[in-house]
Image (tube, rainbow, N blue to C red):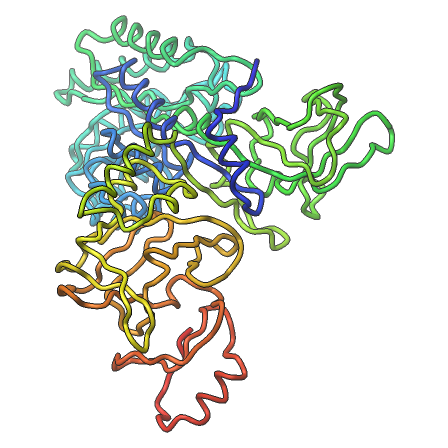
Length: 563
């Protein structure tokens, strides 16, 4: 299989001096994969299994594409709700849940639950009366790289009996679900569970409880180092089996995760060390700065690993850099090759790593969680767009030459503040700062922001993660600190929101302690907030000697340090 890295992905890696490892997600590929799934099965309802990659920009991209979402915990529910996805677009697909979790999900608006055990059905009935329930049945998983037969699924007979009991428990019997296994390579794997599900549908209809939904799960595969069948191969078979076994075709749900985000991701990693195997001098051990505990847990998934070098290659074993001896990613049996020119300090790309990497990342040995960035294919005619924007009175707050240094999506570009709304001006004793040129309501989006991403802490930078900062000397870099601010930053979504009503000509402020672990410099706070904390530090740093001296000598003894 010939692996081609899109040029704009390669350009991102070449132009950004960021600490590795990190995952880059191409949002255009996310959208393209989802759109293709819809086209292949237009009458189905397609739920994205967000455990595959729950990055807010991924969820938002799918939401804007009309997506639905399969969630497995209250944490995942909250991820969706926090970006505006309504609860009626969520399916609680985890059959293992505490009663309290069911209650929380119900109170947040979820009304569809999957179960595979009678006790779970009883829990749902006690705290989520009137909900629709879908029973998950066993599927043998043959043909899947990772079968899921051991842990999940009710027998055919149990599923039939439990769904019959649902109305007496105050619940609506709604459908049958199954999962043929992760990275399922055979479209025929859907035939048996669809046939079994059709029998349950018939049995319930005879009892006067017709079912509505056939949830065929996920498992649709991604091409890694070997080609796999196209998505249309699987959807065609599923629709054929639906027609073969159902007189009245049910509404089909899918729960694709890997298929949506897998080939949209690329991890940039550095070679930490190269060693010769003590038994075979021709076999090299390549130690990367990411390993099993950094997110590469799926030992049966062999990601393509691409070096910048060409020429003669030799066999390698890939390993992570933690102290755990199990942190070996690919042993000899995977038959990986790497150019003999490869050396320590080289960067390599692990392709198609968009699914089940960040969610499996740990902090073993104190290594940070795998960071995620997102990008899109560059906006067509971007220069002309920028020129047009800056030729009008209502121009973008960012200068064109600065935008040329930055990475941003078309959606973000459209939400950059205009000079008719925000103005950078001299604020006297505070220096330069931002004022509003119009009024904003509490909760309103002021605008998206961008900047140059790097690891250095300097003036006009704000923290994205412990190791990454964004330098923006045109917009958010000029937000003045206040202990009772009127704005808040969403650093992952790159957006600035009002948290109070803001009047025209009012100064825009933020609390530095909400984003920064460490400041480029600490300083005395001059804000007029009644809860002023007198001295400003990052949230993870101690007060400096200057700060301690300042606090000791001020007259106000009722202070609280800003941290």
